[in-house]
Length: 498
Ligand code: GDG
Image (cartoon, rainbow, N blue to C red; front, side):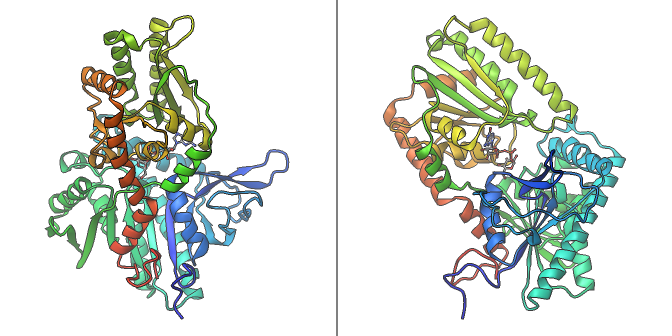
C-alpha cells in the first residue's frame, strides 16, 4: 500500500551542503566529539525529511578531523532541535585538509564568489590557487555524494534518489556526480538551489572561471533561485557565455543535449515555529521607549554602515526621537578570518562609539550594539516588541530576518517593517516600507515615517505581510522545489520525493 498518511518509507533524498546541519565540537575534557545544533530555516525544513525518509546529508562537519573515519556521535538525548533524530549513519562528513579548506572557503567562496554574486566586484579577489582548491573540494563533495548514492540504491534498488545541492560553495559538484552516475548506471535526479543572488552578465563576466561555473550548475536537472530576476540573469549568462539555446519565458536552458529547468523558488521560514516562540518568549526590552531593530550577520552586504548613518540623521533632523527611540543592532560575528570582515567590525565599532558619544544623555543612549549571537527566544521577543525593524541590505538573496519579524508581530497594534528593494524579500513584501539604503536622507525620512505611522495603517500592512509569509512558509518552499523537480506525488501531495 502507498504511504499516504505516512511521509516516510520509499522517499529518498541526499542533501549536499557546505556544512552539515550541526557542527561537531571536541569536548576539551574527554576528547570526545559532540554535536552542536545549528538553527536556520534550511535545517528546520529539510532535516525532518532526511530524518524520516531514506535520506542522507553530505557536508563539512565544522571541525578538522585528524582521522576522517572517526565516527560521528549520535545526538544528545535531550536535544530538541530538528536534527535530533538524524542518526549518524545518515550523515556523511566531508573532511578537507585545513589549508585547502581555508583556500576553498575563505578564499574562493567568501573572498571571490560572495562579493561577486552580490554585485560588489571591487571586493572580489580572483586567485588561481583558490579556484584550484574550490575545484578539488567540489570534486571531493561529488565523490562523497556518489558514495552516499550507492548506499541508498543498495538499500532501495528501485528508487530514483533526489540529490539536492545547496549554494555557491558547490557550483561544480553536479557535473561530476552526473558523470560518474551515468558511467555506473546509477539513477538519480539532480537539483540545485542558490541562496544568494545570481548577478547580471555584466558582473558575472568579470569572473575568469565563468564558463566552468555555468557548466557546473547546468549539470543539474533543475536550478532554483529566490526570484525571477536571478533566474533571468543566469539564463542570460548561459546564452552569452556558453552560447546555449535558451527560453526566457519558459525558463529553460539547453546544454549538452539536455534541457535544464530554471525556477524562481523564494525561500520561506518556519512561520508557526516563530509565532509559537513569540507567544512564549518573556518580555525583555524596556517599555519606556521604542526600539528600532536590526539583526544581521556582520557582513558588508547588509548595509550596516549606511543604516547607522541614516539613524544618526534621523536624530539630527527629528530631535523629538531623542530619549524616546533606541536602535538595537545585533551583529552576529561572521567570517572573522577574512580581512574585509575584520575591517567592517572596526568601522562599526567606531561609528557606534561616535554616534553614542554625540547623542547620549545621562539616562539614554541612541544605539545598543550587540556584537554576538542572541538566543532564539530572546530574538523572538525582540522581533515581537520592536516598533520598527530595519532590513536594509545593499544586496541580499532573500533575507529571512524580514520574514521572521513579521511572523513574530503578534502584538496589537503591530510594528513596521522597512525593507530594501535590493533584497529578494523587498521584491515580494510589498506592504513594507521600501527604502533604498544608499539614499541616506530618504532612509532617515522612512524611519521617521515608520515611527509615526498611524495604528490602522500599521495593522493593515502587517496583516497582509503576515498572511503571505504564513502561506508561503518554508514547507511550501520545499514542496515547490520537489514539484519543480517533478518528484511531487500529485495524489499524496506530502511534499516528499518518491
Ligand atoms: C543567506 C542569504 C537568504 C541572525 N542573528 C541571530 C540569528 N540570526 C538568524 C536569523 C536568520 C539568519 O540568522 C540570517 O538569515 P538571512 O536570510 O538574513 O541572511 P544570510 O545568513 O546571509 O543567509 C540570504 C538565506 O541565505 C536563505 O536562503 O535569505 O539572502 O544571504 O534566520 O534568525 N539567530 C539567533 N541569534 C542571533 O543573534 N538565534
